[in-house]
Image (cartoon, rainbow over all chains, first blue to last red; front, side, top):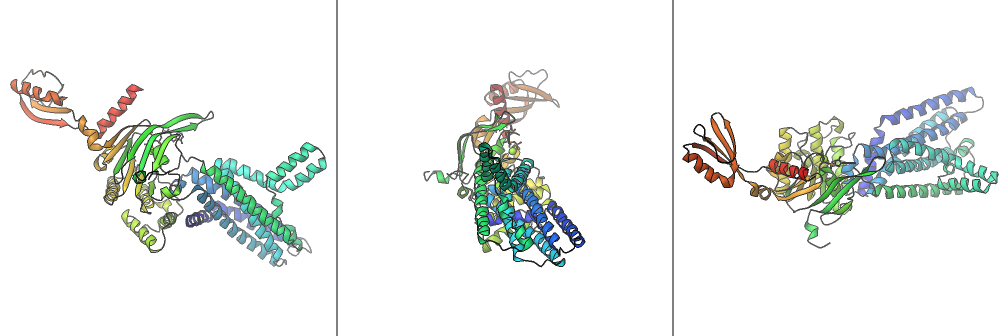
Length: 255
Length: 311
Ligand SMILES: Nc1ncnc2c1ncn2[C@@H]1O[C@H](COP(=O)(O)OP(=O)(O)OP(=O)(O)O)[C@@H](O)[C@H]1O
Ligand SMILES: [Mg+2]
């Protein structure tokens, strides 16, 4: 377990020393400023525009960062051959992968805390006091980003960085569309289309499960079962992704 | 696994590795037939020209790639097993390391991977910096290291867990003479401490001075294995005679070269007696007789030409 944490620590260190990360963070700051301007131009919003745009922005940029970091955590290791000396140590491949994931999860957590903190601060300045719902929405986003990071790792285990990035982006988009797709399919009435949309729905992750933005925005009561479902679903799905990635990673030659 | 096997650091038997490449996934054999054993406590040289398959073999020894056929045993087990790798240290061919770390962070990390803790961990790290002459560079980031420094920090990460078997892929490449000597000294020191050292090289002189055993790899096949003295000794066959010969002297056999008014006669050792007598009878004066011991270089070239003639 010690070596898994060591790998996680190094992965975290690499991520926070990466400049691309900071350019992505810069966009979040710009977005917050723009939403502040919009908020002050709209009467009676009192920070709601900041919260609305901000949460969506944090989610989108968080997802992009999770994709970028998840893919590069694995493909840079392979391309730059830095993993040779690590895998030659008494470290199992599963342990290596798990360490990579935990490092990624920690990085995403810190980033989310930083972006979320800025967001809550700006929103408060414009009149929307921080709420438990907003914190919950951010925490649930962490689950989503972790899942996306696992998807990125999985693709990066067996294909190049460009394809991995594209595939992960695809999963992210489909993951937010599937509930709608499933409903549409049911409406079509066509048996084949119903089966197809249901297949897509169950195969791809349903990322809307993690979405508590509406609750945060209107301070709606949160259902415990919704949170519980998101937790169980996120952990189980991410675990399955990592298990599959480990299976593929074990069989891989590093030449 | 019997108890004997557990004490053999490396055992390879009929090992082959094919890489599938290109759109049609054509198989190319990087290693065709490799069989040899490395005895415990030896300093073993793995010799081969560029592209012979040295790195491919070494990667199989660390479980980085799986053999296509044959058996790879390290300390009697499979190198894919992390427990086996606990007893192995590895320096890759090119030192590719996390270059955003400082030297200390890097060694700290590798000490963690080897499961070192507490006081022994701290002492081991300090010892490594000392051993590879990097004391003072602890807080320099690896991306500012020179090639020689990278090679040395690479050696340090290979040795940090105090492994019983050390596998080094071309440990002297890219180093200046002082650096090569330092690496050679470290290898000899490891052997003196009872460790087994396995290293690859295409520079024969590097092996000749330190190895007690070598395997010679030619185009993916191990051609000869054994103690250097045994590989070389039976093939000491030629003698060079330098003499002042009378004008118009015709040697009965051997290759003749005239240089600086002297006769240089090279011939088989068995023929040297009669040739000397013939030369003296003709009124010549012998200046020197030098047996040509076969060097690793000639052995290596012979193996190579033998393969080329056959193929
Ligand atoms: N990943 C790979 N894919 C396909 N072929 C490879 C791969 N790696 C090596 N080879 C081929 O296998 C052969 C042996 O390569 P290897 O790197 O083991 O040689 P080497 O003895 O280490 O050479 P060098 O002295 O140059 O390091 C070469 O012909 C090489 O082209
Ligand atoms: Mg090589």
